[in-house]
Length: 207
Image 1 (cartoon, rainbow, N blue to C red):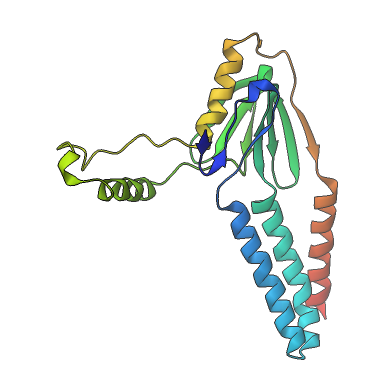
Image 2 (image 1 turned 45 degrees about the vertical axis):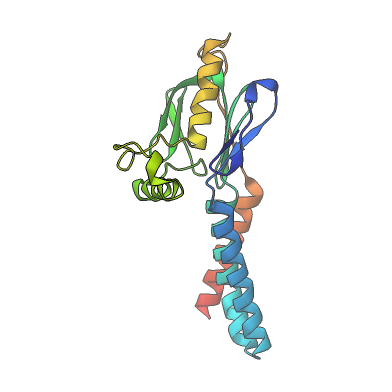
């Protein structure tokens, strides 16, 4: 089946399913194109000094977009969740999960702590759901519409539903709460690039 424009498969067969906000990578790609275009425009215009001054800022912006939009996601497999955030990742087995909140962001409670996913699909807005419903109504003949269908709203399914369903299926199986622990790791290359970008901006601004 497909949810939020992404293909979603059952995770209990061993495959890994990746969930992320539908527009995240499109936003990142657009910002990177803008940064590259700005730098190229300065070079072509002969403003080499301005290009050199702008380069650290553009690199820092590109790094920020990478950690905030491109990299974050939530992966689900037959063993548990993998929360991929900007510079830190969390491996959460099903057995360690205590609860899952799916409000404005997906939060997984495990081992007495909460782990928020930066890149999990967000809930559809009321405006977006209403607009989609209006488009559906306009595409049908008025003669087949029940009287209350013009104001009713269909249930909206999102990729977040698949995240909760995966945990519910695990609880219904042989998974025992607390049988495994959560492991967290820092993404050192991403952090190193960010530190270098900040240092370059500071040095450029000092001269």
